[in-house]
Image 1 (cartoon, rainbow, N blue to C red):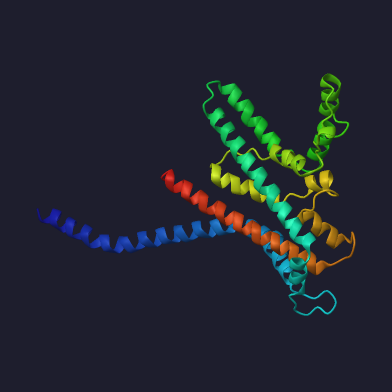
Image 2 (image 1 turned 90 degrees about the horizontal axis):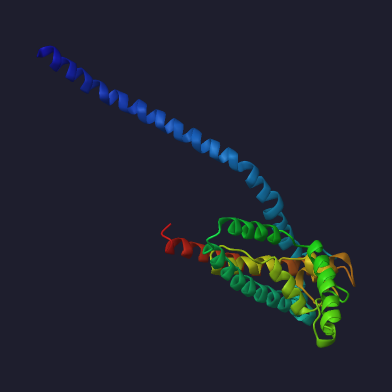
Length: 274
C-alpha cells in the first residue's frame, strides 16, 4: 500500500513540471506554423504592393500634380468635372456597365437555376465547361468575332439579308453603337455566384473593360478607359494630370462596386449559415 501511495505522490508531483514543457512545445509549434503561413503570403503581398498599391499611389499623386510646375493642384479634377465630354464618358461607362451587369445577372441566374436542376450529368458538365470558356473569351478577339458575325458584312447579317431580305443596319441595328456593345459585353458576363454579388462583380468587370470597347467602338462611344487612352497617348493633346484624375474617378467607382459586392457576399454567407 505504501509503495502505491508513494508512486501516486510522485506522479502527481511530476505533472506540474510536465505541463509547462508541453505548453512551450505547443507555443513553439504555433509560432512556426504562423511563420510558415506569412512566408507563403510574401509573394502575394509583393505582387499586391508592386502591381496594385504602388500604381494606385502613383496615379493619385499624379492627379494632384501640375504637369508643368510639378506643384500640388486640384486643377486636374476641375478640368475633369468641367468638360462635358469627360462627364459623358463616365455616364456611358456606368450605363453600359449597369445594363450589362443586370442582363448578365438575370441570364446568369436563370442559367444557373437551369443547370442546377438538370438531371443529365454530362450536359451539366458541358454547359459549365462552355460557360468557363466563354467567360474568358474577351478583348480584341471577341470584338472581331462579333464583327465577323454581326458586322455590316458579318455572317449572320448577310444570311438574314439573303434568306429573309431584311437588312438589319437599315432598320437601325448596329453593333458599333451602345446596344451593340451591350450585347458583346453580355456575352462574357454569364457568371454563376450569388446573384446580387455577382451583378456587382459584373458591373466592375464591364466598367474596367478596355480592349473590347477600343477595338469595337472607339470612335462611336465615349468611355472612360478609352478617354484615358486618348488623353495619355496624345490623340488631341497630352494631359497626364487629367488622365490620372480620370483614373482616380474610375478607382472610386470601382471601390464602391467592390465594397457593395463584399457586403453582399457577407450577407449571403450569413444566410447560408457560414
